[in-house]
Length: 118
Image (cartoon, rainbow, N blue to C red; front, side, top):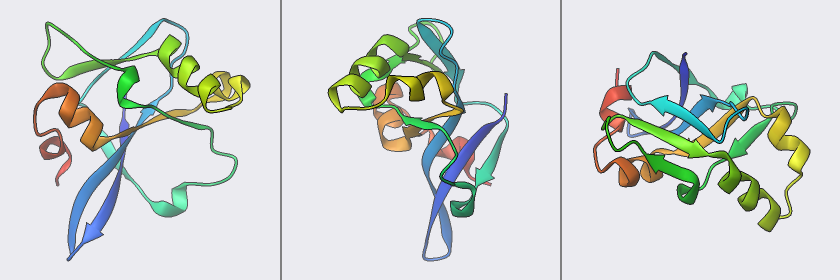
């Protein structure tokens, strides 16, 4: 599985900001690892027909056995969508989950960005 990373360029340096994960809504939890192949996601890669669901920190779950693994709790994503007036159909059509690096680093209590520099 290849992850996609959106960077902000600040003073000529790339700073990972968003992690785009292939959306998997078939189970209660979608599980990922931060140590995976990745490619850069460019601003022009975002387009109107792209189906992306932003994941709140509340929907992220730390793996108790593997420090670099985490999950997205799909029922929580559904709750977040409902409370924000989102379209439930968009969840089933989602291509990607969008996760902020700040949220992921707080959850895992580690510098996750280091895996995506270079």
